[in-house]
Image (cartoon, rainbow, N blue to C red; front, side, top):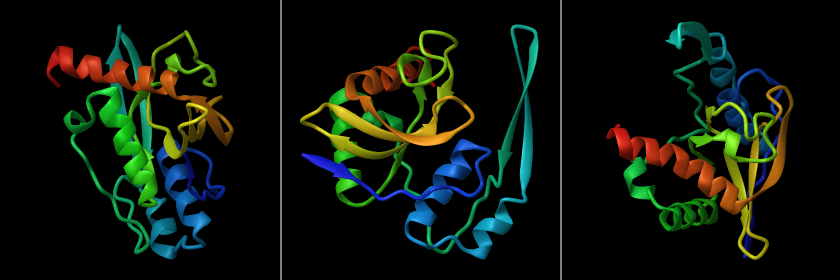
Length: 171
């Protein structure tokens, strides 16, 4: 069984979340003025880790488009590998894209493979059960937005890294 949703190319290629949303809208030819205007809203977050100050920029935290709807699911409902695969398949069968937090250092296609752990959220656009692959859209090298088929077990391990932290610290 193979499911693969349509995806467009973002015209704005600066931040993953915004690029994911625009790719979805562009694939349906439904990018609208409200979405583009929301891109003007930016927030900056400062965090300190190991005495090092880091900044994160989030554009349009309140993105609105008449052509987008968001569905949130509590992570505890997809806290095992089997539940996660079932959720991804069901979502894709219903033409719903998935956006989930993973540890990108666990996936070979990311530039930080086996290096610095980074909590990151790729866009899931497909799955091929026979080949044991999952298709992601993301900035794999942190500069160029693209699609790649990833080993499903690597993806599940990357997801479970985050889930194990949540379980350990009861987040």
